[in-house]
Structures are given as C-alpha cells and as structure tokens.
Length: 255
Ligand code: HEC
Image (cartoon, rainbow, N blue to C red; front, side, top):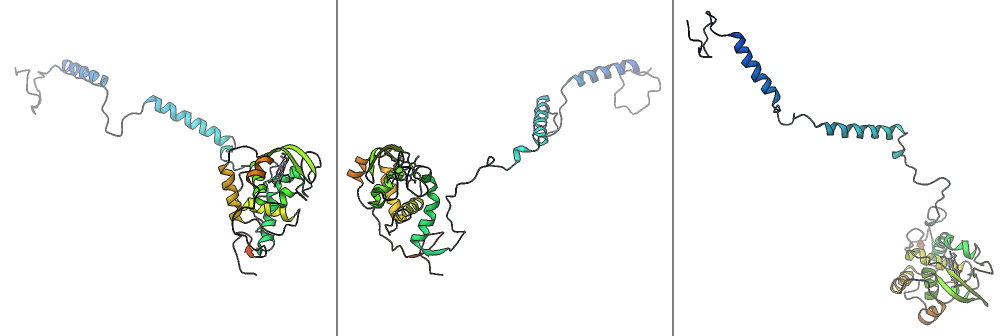
C-alpha cells in the first residue's frame, strides 16, 4: 500500500485509490465556503458601487427626467413678464441723423430720459398746477445748473416757490443717472420747455454727480440749494452748435 500522504504534486495516477475522494472534496468545499464569505478584492477601478450611489443616481435621473418632461421650462428663455415694455432710455442713434449739433443730440437723448419725470411733471413740463410744479417757466430749471442737478439727483422736500406759487411736496431722488443721462435730461428741460440756449456738458454733469456723492444721503431742501449750490456747474462750456456723433456725443465731421 502506498502512503496516503502522497505528495500533491505527484504526477502518477493514483491507481490504488489511496486518496479518499469524499474527504478531499469536503476540505475543498469548506475552504471554498470560507473563501466566498471573504470580501472579494476587485481590481482597482472595478470595485462594486455602493447602494447609496445607485439610489442617488436614480433620484437625479428621475428629477432630471421630470424637468425635461415638463416642457423643458427650466431652459426656456423668456426674461420678461407678459406685456412688459422696455423703457426707452437708450440713445436714439438708430433713428434719424447720426451726426449733428450737440444741442440736438443731447435734447433727443434727454427726451427719452425725461420719461422718468413726465409722470409727475407732465409731458409738456407744465406740472399739474397742484401737487407737481411746472418745469416750463421755472427759475429752478433755467437758473444755475448746480441747483437743478442737485434737485434731480437728490430729490426735493419741503416748500418751494415755483413761478409765483408755493409747492410743498416730495420729489424722489432720480439718481443713479450716468453723467451723459444727467447732461441730456438737464439740456432737454432747459431747452425743450424753456429756451436757455446752452447745453449742460457731460463733464459738468459728472461734477454734479461728484457733489451729489459727497453730500449726505436724502432729499435736498430749498435752504440747502440756495446756500450751497446756487452756482453754475464747473467745467468748460461747449458751443451748442458743435457737430457731434449722436451715439458717442464726441465731436464729428459734418455729414
Ligand atoms: C414722483 C414724482 C416726481 C418725479 C418722478 C420727478 N419729480 Fe421733480 N418734483 C416733484 C415734486 C413733488 C416737486 C416739488 C417738491 C417740493 O415741493 O419740495 C418737484 C420739483 C422739481 C423741481 C424744482 C421745482 C420746479 O418745478 O422747477 C425740478 C427742477 C424738478 N422737480 C425736476 C425733475 C426732473 C428733471 C425729473 C426727472 C429726472 C423729476 N423732477 C422727477 C415730483 C417729481
């Protein structure tokens, strides 16, 4: 009888059947079960994914599908509510002449910005004779530009005499305005409702904005206007007939 503890690597057939097959299989099965209870070590990158990752992905897919299914409204481009009309504060450079006297260029632009004021002061600048004072025939409009600019930027409260009548209301501040917008609206009210015949330059308007930014917040009063701002705005004046490009307001050659 051969030794039952024959070396495993023996290549000779086990003719005498010294190995107990049942026993040998049993040990194999045992190790197999034990091994299968161990966590299998997968190759890097091939590890099984956690259940929670599956659940999270499912939620994302469901919600995403819902959004797309609902007509893709999330991606719809409709920034304005219905019946919304954009206020025309832009320059009018796309219509009419594009080169002309600076007085005309600023008045044209100022007319658009005056849309901010016309609700109170009226489209012809005549006020309502009761609560809102007129801009036509008002010394506050035709007089010193620093006063006018500070009324527009800061708003106004308390009594004010306009064309022989006392008003005592509240005008909200119209700032922020860019220097070009302020120059334009001031030139407009001085020349459309009155005939001052000069222009407020962008440089002068920029100086008005500096003065406005330096003073404490809040509406201005007549007392403050008369004691601190009763002067013309600083800045070189420009001949109202100077030819400019309507878009840039910079000097241009006549067409
Ligand atoms: C919400 C209404 C309202 C708006 C908008 C408004 N104002 Fe006024 N404004 C008034 C009232 C009210 C007074 C008088 C305030 C007071 O009695 O202290 C006044 C006074 C004035 C005055 C001094 C008095 C006069 O009539 O000359 C000027 C100048 C003026 N506003 C210009 C403007 C300009 C320019 C704009 C637009 C950029 C504008 N206002 C926008 C209501 C308004």
